[in-house]
Image (cartoon, rainbow over all chains, first blue to last red; front, side, top):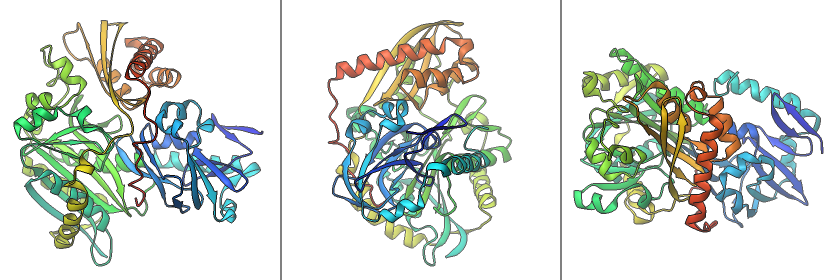
Length: 147
Length: 363
């Protein structure tokens, strides 16, 4: 597995990343396991609660697949791909500290994808470095990330 | 869509209605022929305790006391801790479409600036401390919260025009109540009010209207779209805010209380922290000192909304200026995490998953 480090943030070359949802995805046999990436955790702030879609529920890329509370903000957990939720990682949801200790070991939802073509809208492999640097710069320009 | 900032004023509202109207504004902001944004300035009937979206009511509020005192209780759509609202707490709700919104932190900071600039126009120098407190000279004067509902955003601030501290401490199960029970000036040292600052409430309301109107670049229109918002609020009140299922909805994790003692440059400190799952929601620091110093305030603020994971907590405290001068960040992190582990063990195995009801899927 190729590991990258962009300004202290660990990225993995074998994963897909959704910059809008701040999530990573690992894909196997048409099922995407998704979790927050390290930058997503920092941008959201400390998670106090996660409520996720139950198995069997259909979710749509860009739409809510649950909700979260982070530092008094309550908002959606955005689905990075469309499909049907196959599983929720209850262990991670019930132990939020583990997500911070091991973001890539803490998948949240397993989604059976209904449109694998959506993966083309995500970033992976060699494109990661440049894409992630752009994302960092954008957050810094907004003043939501320390320089 | 009407490119105006609709202005709504209310007074003495009941808890369910107050909350429903706020969320209705968010859901309708920018839709069809309705105003692009809404600003509501209001207060609740004496008194109402409002817990945060994912808190457990019984963990946060002395319900028997609330019942005995005739204090209503309800649940906000925004996050954070329990608050006491009434005639002396000015509610500020701002709703606008989600378009253009980037991150929660950016939004919180941007809209809190509207409150800060209004206070500034009246000669009060306020600042956003941490993520969601507005303070004047180190004392909290307002709390802010933020949520998304449908395609709208709701920013909320509760500004202390005045405060019945004894009532607050008798109703809320917060660390401050523990310290205040031992006497001293625990509340006064951490909170201030418009009355204490000599600021008139009417003047502040006018300054808030001017501040948000300028920030959004919109002219204000008194009461525009009010009937539509009322209709939507009536639905939300009936389906959500006036229901027991909403009131007693279970939060994501149980609340706990952590108490640790450690050495510091000011002598022995006692940190009392309220946790929710693996998160510290709030903390107060007590000790044998005459006044709450800047260092104490910095530590209290630094502990709020942190994860009880030793490495992450130590890194956070070590990177917060002023904390290391007061006490060893590694020691604070280790003590609090050990207390948390001990508390979790005593509480027994956590029920996994059963309380995660996906009711917010339509967000």
